Image 1 (cartoon, rainbow, N blue to C red):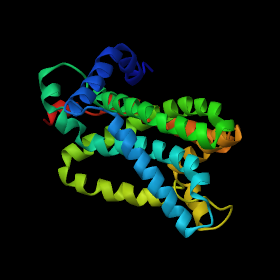
Image 2 (image 1 turned 90 degrees about the vertical axis):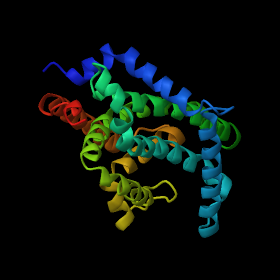
Image 3 (image 1 turned 60 degrees about the vertical axis):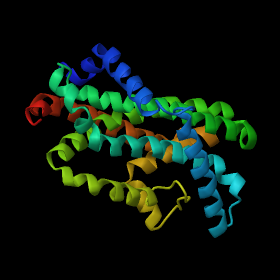
Image 4 (image 1 turned 180 degrees about the vertical axis):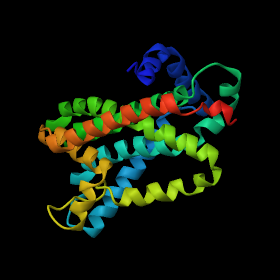
Length: 256
């Protein structure tokens, strides 16, 4: 197996990284603080969510802030990447028609762009942990390999969503409520129990595996091998699926 998707990732890294930076510059061209708007938005969401959870539970808002922040920063990365993939081929239509770049680079470009935003949002985590969880501050470095694992795993579903939505544009209106529903099934604002329906949801929810893995690594300095193994298997499946689709599907350029 030649692993075309991986070879394209390496050989064209200058292209997709440049396109990702260009997207950020265009998006925030008229903004004074640029991507830091995302940080400000994250701060507001994390604070308001923590307060809301404290009102309906016995938890103290300050005590749950770090956990909610870790969950939100990963959920924002995953949710934004998948939602924006619904528009990726439509937005890159001119570039795909007038250049020789492969369509998978559009997905790499999107993932890279959101990884840069993730890096900006990480400032919120560092600040919160310096104040509220200083003992676990150095453990934030564990989020880097977890981010890489998630980013590679997202390539295949993002590619599929991009192709499917370009073929059936009406699906764009269905994707946001679906992911909003999945958000409430994911333990970002609630803590899972050992038994019962919530635990079943975690067992079948890959994002919940990610939350469990990241929380154990950051707050307990432990590796949740069960969730790590599941995510690695999911990554392997995603890589093989991407390679299979790379070989079998006709280029999206034939549909534009």
